[in-house]
Length: 485
Ligand code: BG6
Image 1: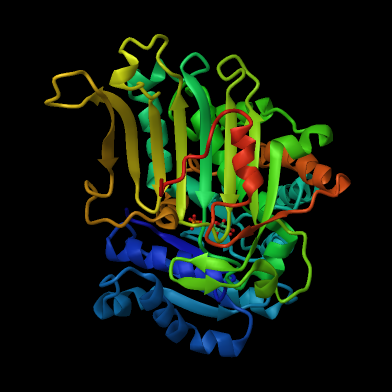
Image 2: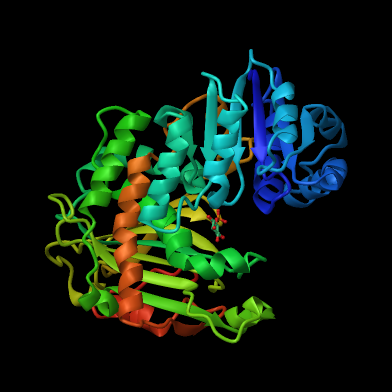
C-alpha cells in the first residue's frame, strides 16, 4: 500500500502508543504494508519528553515486538519517518501553530487521539481552531468513548461538530483480530453453519474473555470503569453482534454496522428485579497464578476498599425471530486462570439417541472459535471408536489451528486497523449509533447494581471467577467451557 499521509498521534508517550500503536506501525513498515510518503508526528507534552522520545521508543519496540522482529537497519529507516513534537493540547497558540507548519496540505491527515476521552472534544476544537482539519482528514478515537450513554453522546456530538461521521474512526481493537473477521467468513461462507445458525439447532452461546493480567498500572482508570465498561460495553458486545447478526446484504461497513445495531437493539434489558439472577460481579483476591502468588485487587490498587468489579458474567437474550429463547452467556475477568478469548456455540442434542446406552451417549456438537491465545476453530463431533467389535461412541475434535497456516506476516489487530484508517476503509470501525445503543443496554445494569447495593463477590486470582458465575449456568443445567478442561 502506498500512503501519502501525515499521521499525528496525540498522546504518543502513553502506554497505548508505545505498546501497541508504534509497534504496529513499525511492523507494517517492515512488512512493506506501509510505504510511500508518510510521516508520523508524535506529540509529547514537554520538551524533555520530546528530546528523549526516540530513544524511549526504540527500547519499547525492542520490548514489545516479537523475538527477532526488531532490526536495527529497519529501525534506522523507520526513524526517518518519525517526528516527535512538543504539544500541549491546552496550549493556546504556539504548539498548534508549530504542528500546522509541519503538515503538508497535499497529503491526507489522520489524527489519532490516544489521550483521555475527556480531552477528545478539546483536541478536536483546537484542530479546527488552528485550521488543521482539511477535506481529507480523519480522526481516530480510542475506547472508552464515554463513561455512560450521556457522556458518550456528548463526546460524539462534540467531535461531530468538526468531523462528519465518515471521517470518524472509532476503534475497538477486537474487530482487528483475525479470528473475529474470520467469524463472518465462517458464518456466511459455509452452508453447513448457515442452516444451523438459529434457535432450532443452537442450545446456547458462550462468549468469554479471560485475562491473567491485573491492573497493569491503570488503577485510576480501571477503578472508575470496572470490567463492565472496560470490556463488556465494547469487546464482548461486539463479538455478540457478529455472532448473532443477520447476514448483511453486502460485505460493506455500512451494511455490517446496520445489522450489528439491530442485534444491540434486540438485547433484552436486565431489570433491577432480576439483576442478581442475570448478572454476576466479582473482584479478585490474592492467589496462585501459574507459578506466582499474585496480589489481590485491593493490594494492587493500594486502597482498603473498592466495589469495582474485575469480573462480570451475564446471561442475556437476543429477542428476535432467530434467537428467541437462546441464552447468550458473557464472561470476562482479570487474573483468571488462563488468558483466553473464545466463543463457544453449543448445539442441541440429536433428536433421538439411536445407539444403545452401552455404546455411550452422543454428545451435542460444540463449535469453538478461539481468538486467543492462539487462533483456532474447533468442532466437536461424535464418532466410533475404531477396531472395537461392539459399537462405542467417542468424542473427537476437528481442530483447525489457523496459526499453522499463517504466512510470515504477523497478525496484529492494531496493525490491521491502522492500515484500514490509512486506506480510509471504515468497515471494522464502530458507528456512533452502536456506541449509543450499547450504552443504553449497559447503563441500566450498572445502575441496577448501584440501586441493589450489589457488591462484587470475591474470587481467587488463578481461578475461573466467583462461584456464583458457575451457578449462573448450573441453574440452567449448563456449565462454562473452560479451555483447560
Ligand atoms: C482493553 C482493555 O480494551 O483490552 C484492557 O482496556 C484489556 O483492560 C485489553 O486488558 C484486552 O485486550 P487483548 O487484546 O489483550 O485481549
